[in-house]
Amino acid sequence: MGKILFFLLFTSQLFAQTLKEKLIGEWVKDEIRLKDGSPILLEEVKNMQLRYVFSEKGKFLITIDGKSGISSYQIIGDTIQIGKSTLLKVLEISEVKLVVQELHKDPIAEPSKVKISLIPARIHNLGYFPEKYRTKGQDTIYISKRNYLEPIFLDNEKSAAQFISDNFYFPAFKVGDFYSRFIITKLGEIKGIEILSSTDEKYNNKLIEAIKTSKDKWLPATLEGKPVNTEIKMGFDMGWSEKMAAKNKVEAPKDTIDPTASNYHLMRANINVEQKMYPLAIKNLTLSLKADPRNIDAYYARAAVYALTKDTQKMCIDLLQLKHLEQAKGTELWRKFCDSKK
View 1 (cartoon, rainbow, N blue to C red):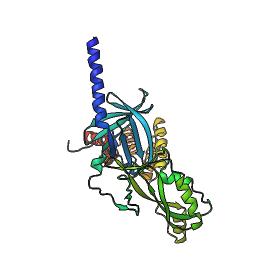
View 2: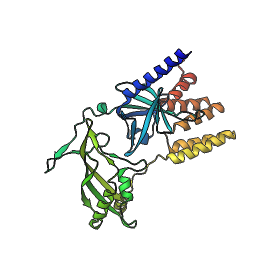
View 3: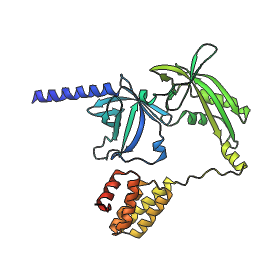
């Protein structure tokens, strides 16, 4: 028995070591899907910037839409523990792909319904050629490009633009538009701050002071594993666009999708179903889908209510819509109950 336990322990440690060797490096989000492979239709998820960096010394850097944080990590079997609370189960790993699913430390809690696919930064950056120029002092400066070459702003809650805006003393009763340029050096220092354009020049120095407040929160951009100087251009719209739209009597395009209203009606429908008030549940689910036609849960729920009320035709219409939206479970149900070819 002792030999078996030793073998299992040795094998587990060897697997963890191999996994860590494959993990080390920089990974960029390729796509995020539901666990069953169905696509997620929310634009904020599809367009989200996500980057993982695993170091040899057990440090983990994560960047989500310009907000970054550093923690430690360790390998436990096929799972990566980030800090003390986050667990990422490795579903697949190779030289060109990493697929993970977030778990919960509470064994009773359900695992995340999404899986995240990432690719190495070196593959993501294929075909990208950074712009650069030389200063009078012969320093090479690269032009920052989102999700390709950019310095890291260390703040879990705010992006650099949000942080600087919060520290920019600009009266709430005024409106203005400012456009700035500055350099983050390969040492993480802020240099060469300029205000390129401004609608109220007397506040230019206030903006420069606000940019300087971020001085201890930057890590330099890296290119081919080496830190480099990068130029950032950043705009600060302090209510200016809204004023110009009103002045020109141009209404900003309204977003016809309202996820908050959609989820509210979905919640009301779930209560209706518990009370067996099916017609009211269908009404609320229809309102939910009117507010957000991408609400997958509302399609599933309405199809289920149609099934309960034996309205097979309408159930199949909702299941067909889920099939068109490439939802694996919906496609399976449509084929099982609605496909006339079977």
